Image (tube, rainbow, N blue to C red; front, side, top):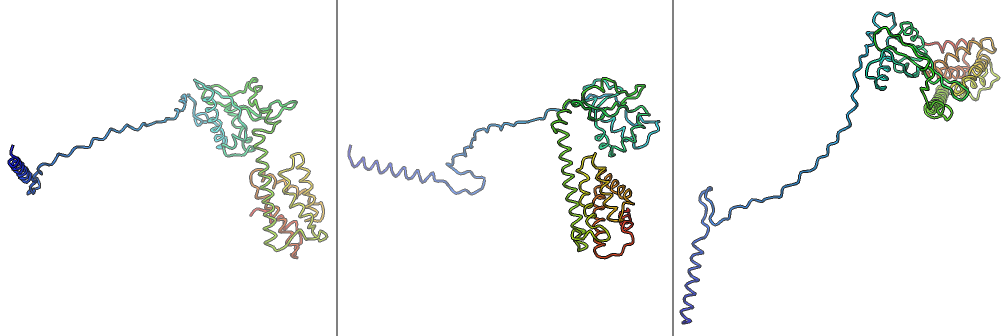
Length: 347
C-alpha cells in the first residue's frame, strides 16, 4: 500500500473521531427538569444489615403469694367490750403480730388463737408506750379474754432467766378462749439464748453496746453542763473550800457522781443514791435531817433518765453547780435547800 495513502486515511480517521467527540458534548440544561446527557444513574449504597443488639431482661423473683386467711378485724373483736383506748391500741398491735406469725407458719386455714413469743418491750415500742404502761393495760385484755400469757423463762445452766413473753392472741370471732398450753411454756422459743447470755452475743452484745453509748453520752452532757454553768457565772466551783457554810466539795462530789448512776449495777444503785442523798443533805442543809428528801429527788431524776428524759439528770447537776456559784459570789440565801427545790420545780 502507498504510504501516503495510508497516512491520509489515518488523518481522515482522526478528524472523524474529533468531530464525533464534539458532537456528543453535554449541552447546557435549560430547564430544571431536563436530565443531563451521558450521566450515569446514581447507584444506591447498600449497607450491611446490622445485627440486633441482644437485650437481657432481668425480673425479680415474684414474692410468695400470701394466702388469704379469714381473720377477724380487731375492731370487730373489741366491739361491745369495756376497754380503754390504750388497751384497744395494744390489742391491735398484738393482733397484727399474731396474723403475721400465722402466715409465716404456713397456716392454710385461719386459727382461732395464735401463740407467739415476743418481748413485751417490742409490743410496747410498736404501740408507742412504755413497758410499765403496757403492764397496766394488759389486765383489761386478759379480763376480756382477748389475750393470755406472761413472762417466759429459759434454763441457762442452773439458773432460769427471763427470755421474753409468751402470748396467746385471739384472732377470730367465736367461742375460743386464748390459752397458753403447758407444752408451749416448756418449748425453747430461743434456742440460742444460753449462748447469747454466756458469750455476750446477739441481743446481749447489742444491749451492752447501747449502755456504753448511753454512759458516754451521760458523761459528755454532764461535762458540758458543768462547763456551761462555770463559764456563765465566771467561777470555778472546784476551787471552793469545803470549810465554807455550804460544803463545796460535797456539792462537787454529788455533781460528778451523778454520772455513775447509769453505770453502777442495779443492786448497788440504792446504796449510791443513799450516799449521794446524805452528801447533798450535808452540803445544802448542813445535816442529815433532809436526807430522805434529797434521796427522793435523785430517785425521781434517775427514773426520768430511764424513761428517756435524760435532761432532768443534767438539770439537777446544773442546778447544783449554779447554787454553788451563787454561794461563791456571796448571794444571800436563808435556806439553800429551799432555793434548790424551787429551782428544780417544773415551771
